Image 1: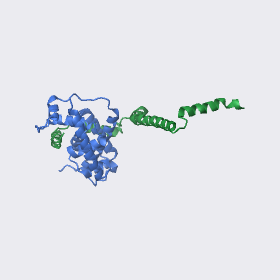
Image 2: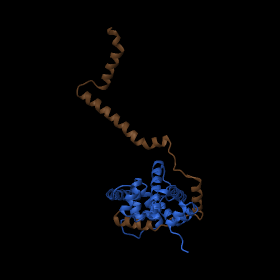
Image 3: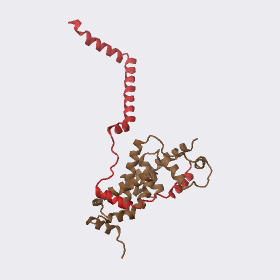
Length: 187
Length: 101
């Protein structure tokens, strides 16, 4: 017997079989952790944000009309949760929470030559540091476009702005990110 | 930072694996969902709001001071009595107005 798809599971949950929500969480948890990890590097906080995402979805299940796949809907909730988190962090940020970057990765950053790309962890760490200098919405645009591979239309839908506004913001955010990366590489 | 290096950085960062959800994550979410709103976003106190507004308040206060100083300088330069002088005149009128009676 085939496993029920998301639509069937949602139907059962709405009919009172609330246990099925755990199955829905299991199916989408890896993707949600993946999205949230782009915005927060601390694993415990990622888990907290993932729980917040699924609880928001649970409370809003009545509003899910099924026109788009459940995966898209829950992903949008995750990005909104991340955006709220970034705004809270921006207000409460008083100190740098990460250890200093390693010399290898700083060499790569400072070098004008085309060297081999840095290790994934180092690259993510540098990007995270530089992205912290950007406004939360700019950060969402860059992260969705460059790391998640989202389309302009998808980003516009998440941020509730036009496609043109997303394109303009993306250009400006990219320039800001480059400047932030240059500042990071200064001795 | 040239465009090629930036693309290299994005490509490398995309390869980083996300942390794996704990084995009991789904069960925890279900438990929390049944208990009601378990984890509310951090509440902001009045001080947090003031803290957030501080740069704007400070800028507004500085702008008012600059405006007053410029206005005083402009009035004095135009030959009218300055704010200090006008204030002294007004004070003396209030304090010594009874002498005329």
